[in-house]
Image (cartoon, rainbow, N blue to C red; front, side, top):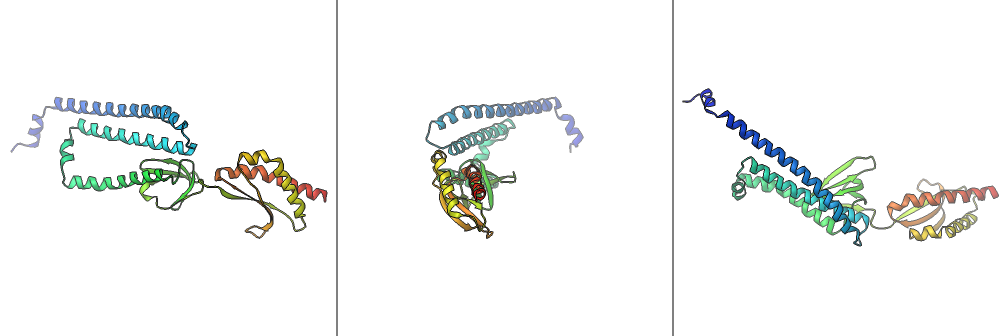
Amino acid sequence: MISFNSYLKTVDWASVINLVGQKCLALVSLALACWLFKKLIHAIAHRFIWKSLRVTQQDINRQQTLASLLTNSLDYLLYFFTGYWALAILGVPISSLLAGAGLASLAFGLGAQGFLTDVINGFFILLERQYDVGDRVTINTISGTVKQVGIRTTQILDKDGTLHTLPNRQVTLVSNRSLQAIRLQVDLPIALETDVAQLRQAVLAIHDKEQHFLRQHSLTPDIKGACLNPLSHLVFRVEFWARLDQHDSIYFHFFPKYQQALTKIKTDD
């Protein structure tokens, strides 16, 4: 029986080291080529895909979603071929593995099932336009802004700055607050003795002066007048219907003007 030490003496270490070196060099070259191709793909996608999308009738959020999904798909295709070539460099009999139907194939099939479910769900998310990049959404129990819609995952940035990554197969309930106009209430605190009729006329005068702003944002103010807010405080309320991303600009445009009008009424009295 040949001892282990005797076996080691029969090994052609020069050939082994040379073979390992060649394999390592080939893998490093493959990794470098993959990195360069990824940079090239992103550059080409940014130059041509974005230009193509800009001439369509899609809004900017839709353009970002489509560009992100296409780039993501190209990345996964590149990773697939890189993995295939890496196995070929290592001498793995890929054709035999693909032809086999044993336990390894079953395990691979079970592992790929989740991936395929993610891809299919991602396709329907895009097709049904459930959400796009930049939309304010609540997915399951996570609320925030959609940062990326990929072929396999969706990324959401919440108000605390935490980035959540969800597999598309886990997207079961979507509440999108960016697709339709949402009610915006501008509440101006008032006292019991405030002349509400005079304040209403002042607010109407403000709206007359701000016709350009109102037309620009497709706004129709609805003056509700004096009412109680959820904290039971007396307020003078004006409602607007606008997209969620417009709420802050509308609120901070009109609230100071309403406040100045109220202050002037108090001063005149």
